Length: 160
Image 1 (tube, one colour):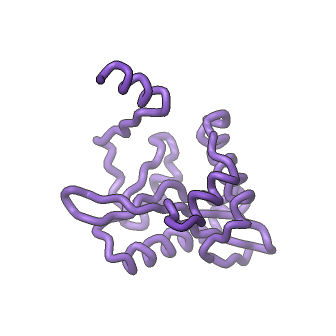
Image 2: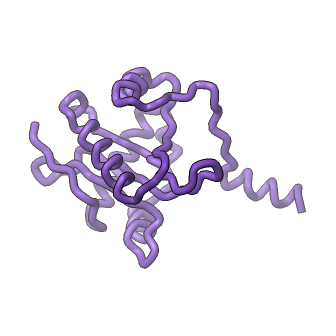
């Protein structure tokens, strides 16, 4: 199976959203995706893009993607956050995930960041094994902490 890795374009966002939805189903969160094609287009391709996205294309179809954005570590300085690296089921095991990760690492090196960070769900052993085989440190002693939209509202209401 042949593919190319390239920077995404605005008109790729419908297919990127399809991959995002595919991941949500895989992670048993099929109803959690709220982002729209319009939001992806606006947030990724406006005057000040909020993210950078790489896509893997095969036969004019997007079959994988990696979405990153800048963060700042008070301990290290500039870092990149890898929000998602998604490979459609039929392309897993073809080297496509490695190629996407390589693109992210090269991009991060070009930006001279100190670290690339991301999360992986604890039951996704194939992904954990993949990342560890690439030299990533899967830190199992850290928990992800979030305030969702309702949590933000509740916090502000209760902490004036």
